[in-house]
Amino acid sequence: MSTYKPRFPVYIISKGRWKRRPTSNVFESMGIPYYIVVEEQEYEKYSKVIKNGTVLILPQKYLDEYDTFWERAEDNKCGAGAARNFCWDHSIENGAEYHWVFDDNIEAIERFNNNMKVECKTPTPLYVCEEFVLRYENVVQAGMGYSIFCPAGDFRPPVRFNTRIYSNQLIKNDIPYRWRGRYNEDTDLSLRILKDGLCTVEFNAFLISKRGTQTMKGGNTDEFYSKEGTLNKSQMLVDMHPDVTKLVIRWNRDHHWVNYRPFRKNILKKKKGLTAKRGVDNFGMVLREREKDNANR
Image (cartoon, rainbow, N blue to C red; front, side):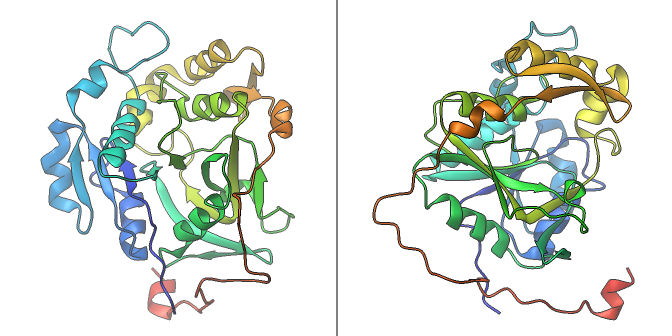
């Protein structure tokens, strides 16, 4: 079985989750090299448990200088965007054209094909996503969809274009944006990209399985949602993008609704001289039955 590791650096942003660290465990089981970015006061705790990743300290200046969009609250917390901006700059400093950034509550990466979801044990899915993105001039953000939104009994296309990218992002480093906002920084970034006529790609051929909002301690759950709920995060997005966003109640809580229809006109532009193989290319991935001792864990 051939293995294709990602071409571009992979980052996890994490806070308060050194005891249960789903994403880093998934990456280590898949053989994905990664950095994990943490705040200085938690560096020693993470360093003791991270096996094959590199632990980076988030410089304080990224917290101090972060654009929270709203006036800073009394608690002066700014969410995950500051760490995301550090990942972006760190990858540029190391000469990368793109970078990946993942949330720290991802429990599996799955192959979704023929209505089957199969957990991946190879780093190849990230490489395949990169391979697709690199075919186009104007795809500047991409990521894998949520497993929960792709039930095995329903049809889903292998890719979706010009929508929001959540929880895992492959970002082109030279685009003129940075993360902002105390909450919902992922939706905001996707909308700014789309409003400028650029394109995003969400993959359903590969999916991420993750914990739902407010179901895992640490991260934004402890930082915000367990104390203030989700109204503020939804209201901030409406204030950022009132032309395409409104407040709604979904899943029995305050939420935002975004109209992505205006961005259907954003057309992907293939790179000149592009040649792609005809037919199916599984990049060396094969379907194997899980070993009994692993399947029963």
